Image (cartoon, rainbow, N blue to C red; front, side):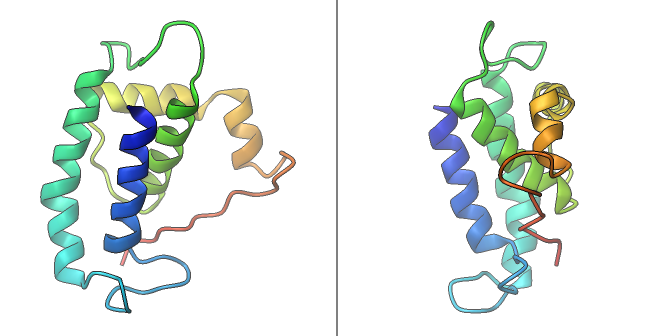
Length: 124
């Protein structure tokens, strides 16, 4: 479920957020008004639904980190670095806990085998 939800977030972000390669209003991109409506109305609703799946500690599973959690973190991180603050309490706990993991920091600081993970989605 987290994989599918993360894919839905990614697809919507491709349409409603400008990227380092494509501005709003370009083919297949929303305009600024549509972006703002998505950020104010649709995205918070999506975040609330995901928030309900997490437990009070912001966990989706007890023992392991799943691929769905990794993908979800990646999407939440892209939303966060695009200056969109829409994380409800349990998702915020999930994000904050995941952000400080050594493996996450290794990727974010450019010390992993994939190099530096740069910001892709930007704030218009």
